[in-house]
Image (cartoon, rainbow, N blue to C red):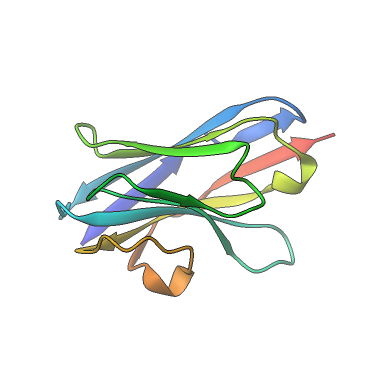
Length: 125
C-alpha cells in the first residue's frame, strides 16, 4: 500500500505561480511512475503530468506543458507540481497518483493504482 497526501492548493489570482506537493508513504517502490491529475467541475479527470523514478523522464498534457513542471525529491518521497502563469481554466481539484513497479509514463488514470485525496486550486481572473 502507498499513501499519498497532497498539499499546497489554494485560491490565487490569475498569472501567479503555485507549487503543489504530494508526500508518499508506505510501500515505496524503487521503480514507480507518479502523476498529477486534475478534475474541474463538470469535467472528467485529466492527466496533466507524469514522471518516473527510472530515468526521471517526464511527459505533459499539451494544456500545461509550457507552464507546469513536475519533479520529485526521492529523499523526502515527495512529488511536486510547479505551476506558473495560472489561468482561470486551471481551477480544479488536483490529485497525485502512483503506479508501482513501472517505468512507463502515462497520463491515463486507469494506469494508476494509488491516489491521494486531492487539493483544490482556484484561480480567479
